[in-house]
Length: 541
Image (cartoon, rainbow, N blue to C red; front, side, top):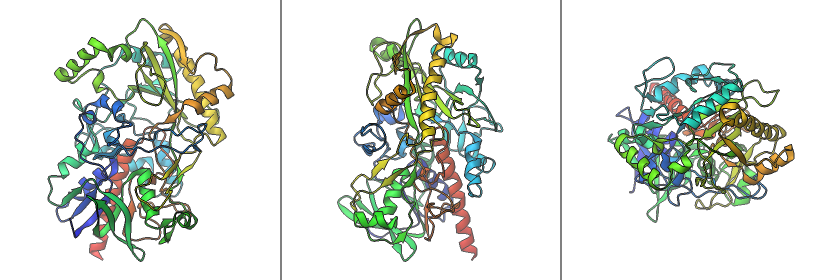
């Protein structure tokens, strides 16, 4: 495939890259090359919603990353799933579609990022959406991204919502319709699902665009570096089929390889902290100390209990009952095989100093066997997975060597800050209260995790470090801003370079409070507008 050339070369066909490929090729005069390290999204588990449980550690559909032993989890090297397939992590995630609190985006704007306030980003959420319900002020029906309500509402989840209201939490009919200043609340999550199938960005954005003659998709291609001519990005070098090839960009190179891939590629290209680049033997092409720094993720801890006298997913996932679920899915497109990772979510304030809810608690009418893999337990149970919404701890993503095939060092640096530790402990106590509220108490047999023997703050914290894991919300490693540690400006252009942008979750100045897939799609929608506006200015000049 010699001599690849286009106006734009996009690296990474994930949640952001697929959006960009679609939007930029809407102009038939614009040529785009989209490069993806993984393969086609052929695997059936990708498209069956509940199949995500089999995908998070899939040997070919993920990168097989692990977080460092120094991540704050008692030396554990936890799996760190990221999608390596068309659609990226949108093809393997739990399909939860939550836009987050409006205060998150106002904070981005207050940090000096013009155009990123809640009022200014809201239209891009609507632009992306093909909502299954009627169009209104919150939702639109004419975008590519299918979004859906939770279809079936298990009785245990309904009881959990009642239990939340018994604690004073407001029931929200729509968790994507959140006013400023909202207090504790609970409601049913929405999903990136269209009909009975997962709505990854590969399905919703990329597949329609692949019919256009001005888009070329290259799979199985590992990008080695961005090619720089002085301070201008002119293309990328990648390996495919045992050979090293090049794709040249007449206008821009756009990195959409995610919060792990984008900083790693920049570092391999000689863009980063000179001290770090010297350690791994990469010549400095452009000093930018913030590349791979400021990395953030949400840290998940589970509270779990055995229940009685009510149906859960545990018994529905075995034997004849599971066969019935398969038949229901095939015949009607309903049942547990359409479920997201959680069906309800609560946002609550657990620290007095917080201005808005600071802990997100998901709820599932299921419990899990010990271990990092999601395997349902043999006894009926319920689980809440919770995280601190605005972690203050910052970590890093740093290339270990100059070899593109070597995994970078991924260190989320969980629980490094006191506020993070206090939030996690208080969050687990709050979930205990939730489980003991009357609507759930009637079904409660006993707490199994962390267990009734855990009572002190130190015991809760020790449990968190021993069992906690990622929520898969990697972000902020190419942070947007104007200060010396920022990597991109508010137009998503890499500081000090021309023709190079980063457009994915890595540009978040601070991680959003809730799940990151919907915000990442929004970032790409807005990023496409910024790219096209720059092209119009260039033509006019």
